[in-house]
Image (tube, rainbow, N blue to C red; front, side, top):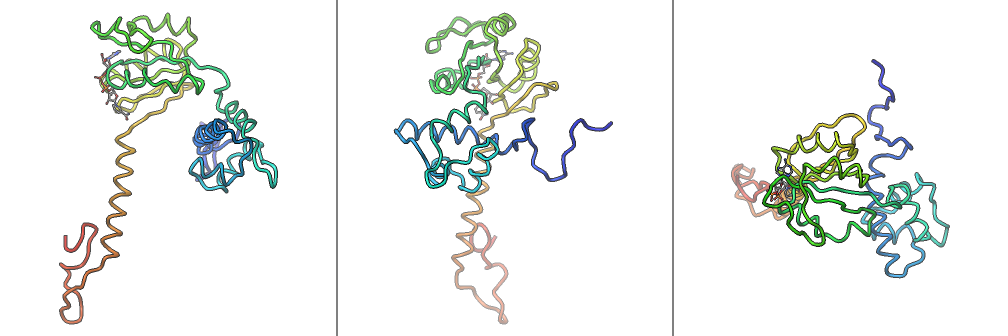
Length: 253
Ligand SMILES: NC(=O)c1ccc[n+]([C@@H]2O[C@H](COP(=O)([O-])OP(=O)(O)OC[C@H]3O[C@@H](n4cnc5c(N)ncnc54)[C@H](O)[C@@H]3O)[C@@H](O)[C@H]2O)c1
């Protein structure tokens, strides 16, 4: 069967609008940087200023923004408010999205208590759990509701996004129930790969993986440090003794 859309091998994957997925992933970072600049009263920003605020290099930032048709003004830079609006419109956060959180344990509580979603275009409309001991409990200004009410909540609140913060075991079933209720985007915190039908977007957040990536870089940094501090090596027949050669963990294995 011929795929609907073919992609050159090695070419970056792109959205329907032809924007590379990697660029889409950086747009929220630019939006956050622009919001900070706007809050501090900055009206225009050069690509270098904006790139520094977003933690990327300025060539990449200019290329990313060119996909939105935004090129800035030579010698002036980017209009902070306008670019903020353009990016928010592209991401789709100029409108409010209704979100439900399923699994109101440690992580669910932390997310429910986070006040930053509201200002970024997300409205948490329900906190759901299956534990009768939790149903009816107050979390901030909301009350935990029974997961069994999901269908009704999704229909009345026009919920687009479901956040899963249950243990791994029930996560697939929770995901299936969300999809069946009409939720088309899922953010999964449970440490399990979930399957969803075509047309449903799923993203996974895994702090352990992020920590492991940092651990990898830490290990390389300490390895490089050990290798740059080459100690005096005992020499046998003109060559250093193998056991005394520096390794990633220091001298000797
Ligand atoms: N992604 C990350 O970076 C990250 C970080 C920490 C925790 N986690 C994961 O997040 C999840 C939650 O962690 P936690 O510490 O908050 O756990 P927790 O046990 O405190 O909370 C889980 C909640 O889910 C509810 N629940 C269980 N089955 C359910 C179902 N079928 N329907 C509705 N609710 C249900 C439980 O009643 C409980 O309140 C776990 O899967 C954990 O591994 C992920």
